[in-house]
Image 1: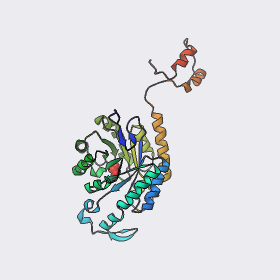
Image 2: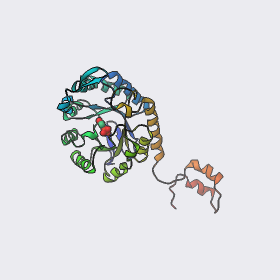
Image 3: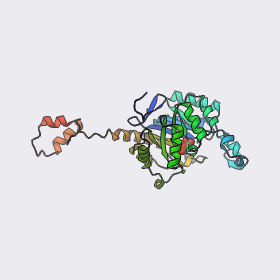
Image 4: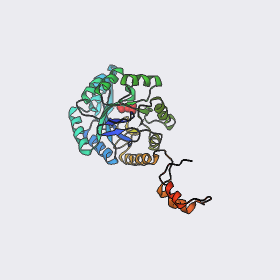
Length: 312
Ligand SMILES: C=C(OP(=O)(O)O)C(=O)O
């Protein structure tokens, strides 16, 4: 247990200021109901160096409005009703047991966003490191209360939500065990609507809550900018191929991009440092060569400057 109130535990990993950015590959339903696709996406996330993969868990009869059930649509599996389609892309216990085992083998966490309270009970059959509240569920107090009762870390995504709705959700969840994500819920989100400075606004408004970023933009730069602004958790949708069938695929990152994203996040977090101005040993050589000594500066003083905070 950490004494830092902005550190959250994810099983054996931790997220928060001073910890490595916790990077999550959001598989969501991009597996299209095929466990082999899920395994390939887990492979891609593990190889890229992600900390976790994430799924979405729904009870179709609860999450699908009744008037939509019988509407027919064309799918890659033929023409079917919307409720049949929702079942077609939903994994059951057998698949999640396989996912659980596979993720353990690969050394990567997995968790999900439950979209209803039955889904919370379902996920509680597994020792998941966290649960997530999708932006669309932020106003679902019953779901939030069920998630709080699990005692696990809860990631609260804040797309499509007003400051008042966010404050209410935090009251219901309590702030001790949550990590909040800035998000814009359009797929794909446009740069002009990402408003990444909200990360800093949330940091100020919720000083005891670690703030992360859940991105739906195309490209990687803006997610890297979120990390530079202090996001301690990052989630991006991942796909095997952006051209695959499914509403989230086009705004998702393919395996090669994911590898670049994690690599660049690690470089940025290393480069942010501790904010204390100092002279590095490695600068002494260039200092000797390049700085004209205008006063009496003994070599010993230059050497002593290395690693010392500047007090001028
Ligand atoms: C839709 C989800 O999250 P977000 O709102 O962060 O995109 C989700 O986690 O299921």
